[in-house]
Amino acid sequence: MIGGFLGAGKTTSMLRAAAWFTSRGLRVGLVTNDQAGGLVDTALARAHNLAVEEIAGGCFCCRFTSLVEAASRLEKESAPEILLAEPVGSCTDLVATVSLPLERIYGDRFTVAPLSVVVDPLRAMRVLGIGGVGGFSANVTYIYRKQLEEAEIIVINKCDLVSEAQRAALRTGLAAEFPGARLIEGSARDGTGLDPWFEALLADSSAATAIDDIDYDRYADGESLLGWLNAEVRLGVPGGVEWDGNARLVDILASIRAAVERSGHEIAHLKATLSVEGDAFELAAANLVRTDAGPELSHRLADPLDAGRLLINLRAEADPAVLESALRSALDALGDELPAEIVHCEHFRPGRPVPTHRLTGLAGRA
Image 1 (tube, rainbow, N blue to C red):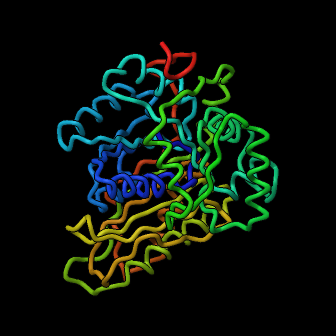
Image 2: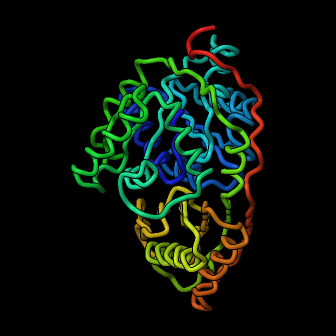
Image 3: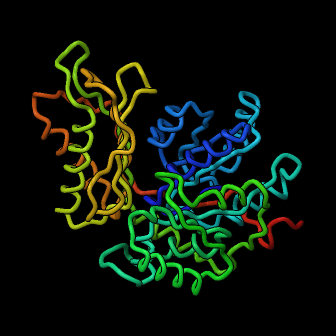
C-alpha cells in the first residue's frame, strides 16, 4: 500500500511506481480508494492505460472484502504480478486493518510489501513544528501523525520544491519522532531519488507492528472535521466554440481555492481532470495541496476543445456546504461564454471508521 495524507502526492507516486515496474517487464494492477465515487485518481490511471479498480464508499479497512474482490477481478482480467493500492488519504491503522488481515487470511495469495507513507515536505514540516504557519486542527493532525507512526517507509516527496536545509531539518525531525521508518527522498513528478523505494517494494515484505494505542474516537472526530466533495461537470457544447482547456482548468481551481480561503478554511487537496468529450485518454490534470498554494498542471491537453468532462475532488477542513458553494461560484464565474452543467455532485463528511478486521501483532507472523 502507498499511504499518506491528502495532497502528499500518492497518486503521482503510484503512477511513477507502476511505470518503473512495467519498464522491468512486470504486470501491474492498481486499486484506488475514496469515500465516494468519481475519482480523479482512477481517471489518471486509465489515461495511463493501466489496469485499475476503484473502491468507493469507505477506506480499505472498512471495505476489506471489496479490496479482496477488486484484486480478484484484476487477477482475472490482467494477471498482475504487482498490485499497488492507494488508501483514502485520511485513513490510518492500516497495518492492523489491512496488512495483517491480508497476510493472515490470504497469505497464500498475497505477499504484502512494507507499508509506505508519502509526505509533502512543507505540510510535514508544519505538522512537526519545524517551519511554516497554519494547518489543521488537533484531531486531523492526530491522523497525520498516526499514519507516520505505522509507516515502514516514509517517502519525502516533492523534494524539488524545498531547499536542502529544509530537507535536512525534516529528515532530522522524522528520524527523531519515527525512528523505525526508513526515510527515502525524491520527487514523484520527475522520478528522481525513488529507485531505492521501488526496489524495496519489490524485494521486501512487511514486518510492521500494528499501532497499539490508537484512539478511534479521536480518529473518527478528525475525519468528521474534513469536508469531502466529488463532482462531475460538463463544460462547453459539442460543435461549439473551442477554448483552452488547460487555462480554464487552472482558472477553475484557482477560483475554488480563493473561495475556500475567503471562508477561512484549510484545503487538504484539490485535484481535477478535464477530458475531451468521448475520449477519456486525452486529458488535462491539475491540483493544489494547501490553501496558500496555487494550482499546478501535471497533464496538458494538446489542443483546444469544444466540450469536456470535468472531474473535481476537493478535501478541506470545512463544512461540505462551503465546498459546494465554492464549486458553484467558480462555475458561475465562467459566465455564458463557457456553459457548465453539474452532472453529479456529492459533498459530505466521512462517517466513523468501522474496520472489517483489526488484528494486532507483527506483520509476517501468525
